[in-house]
Length: 160
Ligand code: SF4
Image 1 (cartoon, helix red, strand yellow):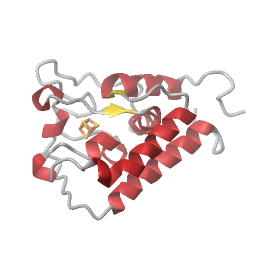
Image 2: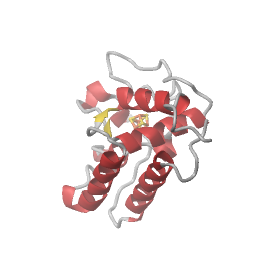
Image 3: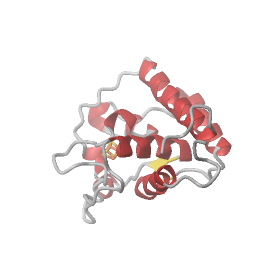
């Protein structure tokens, strides 16, 4: 079930997408060529963490791809992101989280500095607070929880 256009979840997701769009407009030289090295969390030593709003946007994109659960593509050895399909493509690339956009990928230009994205991070935190979030969570669990909320919204959050 889709959230109503004026419900807080829908509003938050729109705000998150606006932050991603704003990041895309920043005059910072980055060139993600989808190497997907940053999607192997154990190899990089880093797992992206998502605020509640980011997780909802990612989960909505996953649902839009026809899935009702996280794909079972995770790899314990590499820590492969479950959203990376067997062909090596991100299933939600256009909706990928902020951490995947401000990558720690040297080939793409390295991580953004805090100063380059401070206001956007603050925006993500504000939206998290509006959603009663408790801060960022590691990608797999964050997306799984958000998908559950989208597929089975609590009573009162559904469209009347
Ligand atoms: S969400 Fe997409 S871009 Fe981010 S780590 Fe997973 S597969 Fe890679």
